[in-house]
Length: 371
Image (tube, rainbow, N blue to C red; front, side, top):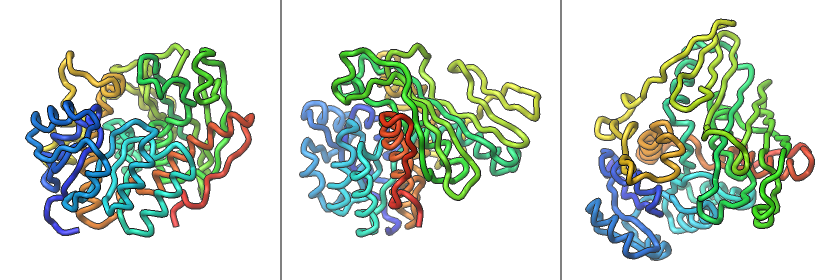
């Protein structure tokens, strides 16, 4: 693409509103349009942020020739359909997690990107969080030595969330723990095996036919001696909210704090040491650096559930926007691109299939692997 600002449209203005000021302040973007089914809310947001183009119909938005890219922040069951429509309409796509809810939907998105040359990026927050950037910096400097094993967990209580979450298989929303264990070694999942454990409330089971309180999955990385383990829970499991990952290296290991807002731990040999995680705003254009520590949902009376429980998603939002815009401007692939996003997402989808099948090994499809 040329160096002219990229016209962005944001779809979904609950969590999605968090990204509006980031795009407005980014030197590579023009925050062009917003879309929300509720007309009153859409116009309220548009007015609040000075955005003239306000849509309530996604299909009408896609007809606008001035829009270069859409950033989708809608409920998970809409992600694949809306991404596919956007790609068919000639728009680049950034989409919140997960990429899709079926393997076939992931395949369609990958194939469309390769047919059209358009860009798709799944906006996985953990791999742009300050914690991940800290460990990545340690690894790239050689401080960890050889990575020997990776572990991640994402545990939360979804009671009180919108009804479509009720009874969701834990691994169907696993990207926050799968993402970091694949991203750090720049690896791809080759196959998975997963076990379900425990049982959720009976009234939650029928919607998805998934009985498990916790699902835990082993991942074998392709062309590597590495394996990883991820754990996910959504209901009926006592645990403070936790998105975490641990990395075990030959020289040093990193373990995420057990209690939110306490310090994480670095082990050098057998010697543990608590560590303060620095912020990485300095990696960003000056105009969006402040968004690693603040956003739209700053005040006590104006908090979005995902932002509150996620502890601000580790300051990742401006890093995600910066990666997407730089990829478009420089004509390179973002991380994660369509195939990588499909690999991360299909780990969760196939892990749940494995759990329902007693832990049977499931291989990732070829289209999720880099060429």
